[in-house]
Amino acid sequence: MRAEPMPIRDHVLLETNFRRIAERPPCVAVLPWGATEAHNLHLPYGTDVLLAVRYAEAAAGEANRHGAASIVLPVIPYGNDEQQLDQFCTVSVTTTTALALLRDVVRSLQRQGIDRLVIVNTHGGNQFKPLVRDLQSETSALIVVADAFLMAPDVRAKTFELPGDHADESETSLLLHTDPELVEIEEAGSGEKVPFQIAGLDQPGVWTPRPWSKCHPDTGSGDPSQATAEKGRAYFDAVVAALADLIHGLSSAKPGDLPYDGSPVLGS
Image (cartoon, rainbow, N blue to C red; front, side):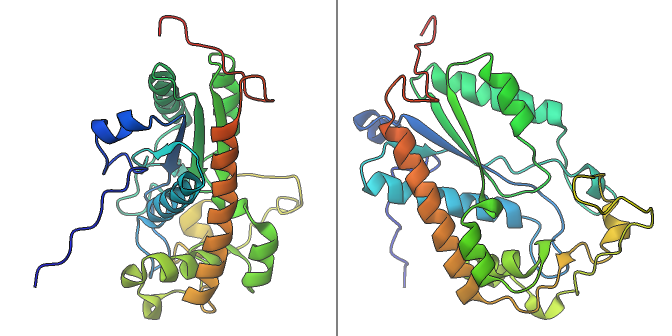
């Protein structure tokens, strides 16, 4: 039996077409940005990519149902993974490359009147604040960074029991909810973290990159053993709701509403 075709989602650029967009042009673009790296022994390399896309598509769809005019761009699948380059098939982009990509995305969209951009980031190694600060001096577009793993902190604290920041209880739960067929939970490592040996490095306010393979033998950081799809659904829904509010607010913004400038682009 032939499966019923899925309907075209107007808010997903990879699926829609020029005719549909022309009927209701977007003013907000949503850019999922992930990373391609190992996630312990049980989650796919595309974990961050999958979550960025799932969040962006669900949130933009919800916002548009309530009157927003947003479009989800194709995902950027590579992030900064310099400390994981000794692991098979890790692909890393440098900060200068990320800045060049972001600059061209913003420049292209603003020429078309799409002058509000939300970056949905799902990779802790991606640090967008310096990039956005630099770009804001070049453009009147409003660029917003949404680090999904930091959103809905109250729900996160109530939902997950074990600490971690990579292929841990929270990320595993999210994948069990969004893409369970890609999770091999029975293969999961413990997510053990080997601490630094130099005194003073672990105190608040002090930071240096982790040599990942030495600090995280199974590439995970945090015990995934308590992960469930139900936990993943609870947190996913909370983040989607928060993102949808953000997208709707940006879509409704008028020029002069801080911090939105809304100045026209010269030559457009």
